[in-house]
Image (cartoon, rainbow, N blue to C red):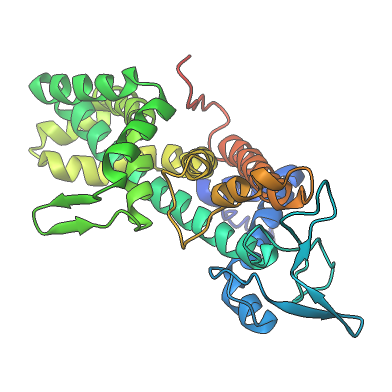
Length: 338
């Protein structure tokens, strides 16, 4: 028996392990992910914060009095400007649980509304992203794989949606449905439901997912392993599920943070225009609208949710870029029209 050591084969890491290892070395992407997770955790604590603060962020509290350093302070203070008519909400106390960011024009705790509003914005943007990815992926798979009349019909429908400017289409759909909701057979969605902006936002972005997916499926449809499966008599649905879908998974994963950022901006815009999230619910967009009349006296009411939107969108985009580079350095996924 030879004394020479037998070289053992090295265990190679899979592509997913390599990709996530590369992502872990991207400091900007990981820092962005950490910031976003902190925002999510803060928003999830909204009910706990409201209970601890003893405040109802959805009810007007014009006659509430709080204590600051043992002194009773009204939440709505008598205006000192001009003729002294009207009331001005209390400014930030910088005390957690005691109107930390002050009050809005109805005496509601801005900090509590910020957390609840963030929760609504995150839920809507996340659910709309899932909705868009499911519908867009199904449309892209069927159009790219089956071709023919299926591709023609789906592509023309996507072209119709693509022809409308995003916000114009979203505003139009919101105005039509905001008064009476959606009623299709047994499915009924009330106008005040958060599902309404989820569906509207999800629909307007379907072409931006379906078209890249269709292009990838068309390329995969003419690959050798798909031709081999077809010649072996493998059913089409099985080829889609077992051969093609796994090859577009990385693209779908990259779409998640990028679509969430776009959906958050769209939801905030619709809510700011009063055709998104409806009272008594709150979102960052509705809080900005509430603070519009207080820009000169209590600017933080509008500035803080605006800053929250900007930070959330920024970290989602930075993380999305890092995720794209890690999963597929050659990927050219773009959500724009160029």
